[in-house]
Every structure is written in structure tokens, then in C-alpha cells.
Image 1 (cartoon, helix red, strand yellow):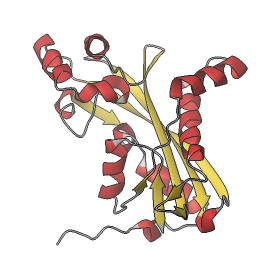
Image 2 (cartoon, helix red, strand yellow; image 1 turned 180 degrees about the vertical axis):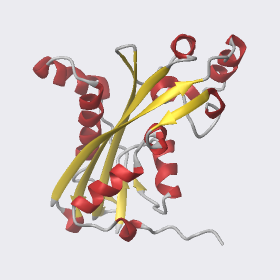
Image 3 (cartoon, helix red, strand yellow; image 1 turned 90 degrees about the vertical axis):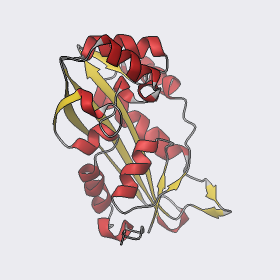
Image 4 (spheres, helix red, strand yellow; image 1 turned 45 degrees about the vertical axis):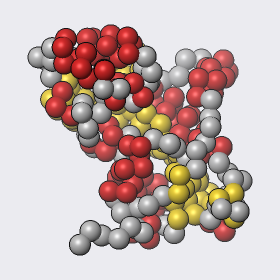
Length: 216
């Protein structure tokens, strides 16, 4: 069965590949700030959990009806989103070097929570048959001896600019993380155990999604 990833996140793509799934990437083109602003105008300030769930669902639903290689989507659509929460402040992607630098100066030696939202749409047969969503969270503790020079070098690498919380655990940012409490894949960008439960709730066995050849 095919999986359609409604995200351009390299980390989510890598996670699925490592789990034996080669998804079809279908960018969702969701205006995330506008979606959050509209929801908050109606419901008030969103919690981190509600924010990531809102955006994960919006991304998945945005590609419903899309054709891939001239054919309707036939399989499972997966949307995901992540934010980092520390000191009652929610951080998405910093985008700008100065913001990433400020965040690292604030979070070194401390602990925050990475929230990941998931939304799966059963689109077998080219139509919506059902959907399921859930959030997951993991606590992240950063090393307390990260120097200003290390922060400067890490930000200059460009890696932290386009990831929630301005850090990764699976690349250059890994050595600056002391401890993860919770499912590590949540911090990468998508909780694989959570995704498995959602897939099975829609009547699909997780192993039916394996379509990548194993390395010999």
C-alpha cells in the first residue's frame, strides 16, 4: 500500500524510509501562520498540542483530491507538524540566524518539550474512507556547557534554521542534546509508534506499508 507524505520535511521522509516505507511526497502548500491565526481568532490561543494537530490535519487534508502522475491518490495520506515548547513559549522554525542564536542561548542547559502532531487519511480507492489523528511529546534536555562559539558555528551551518526548536537530534545538533525522555522519533519530526497506532486504527497493518528493499 502506498503512503503519501503531505510534507517536504527531509527528517520525516528519512524517518519513514528508515522504517521501511518509501512514501510519495506531495507538498501541501499550507499557509501555516494563517491557519493558526484563523483558528486562534475563533477559539483563542492554541496550546502546543492543538497547534501541531491543527497543522498536521491541514497538511493532510490539503492534498486530498491531488493527482499523482495523472492518477488519484490511492493509499494513506500522512500529515505532520512539530513545535518546541519552553518557558511557556512555543517555538516553530526560527528561519533567521539571529533568532536561532537567541533561542540556543536561552535553551542550553535546560529542558523543553517537542510536540508532534499526526493526521492520517485513509484514501484507498481514490476517496476518503476515514481519518485519525494524535499528538506525541518528548522532553529534550540540552547540554549546559555549549559555548557561544559552538552556537555560532551550529547556526552558521544552516541546519537549525528550518527545524522546530532550532535543533536536530539526528544530525549536527545531536551532540548538544544531553537526554531525551520519550520516543526519540517524536523529536526527529514524527512519532513512529503513534503513526503505527493511527494506521492500525484505520484497518491497515503497519507491515503492509513496507515497500523499501532491505540492505543486503
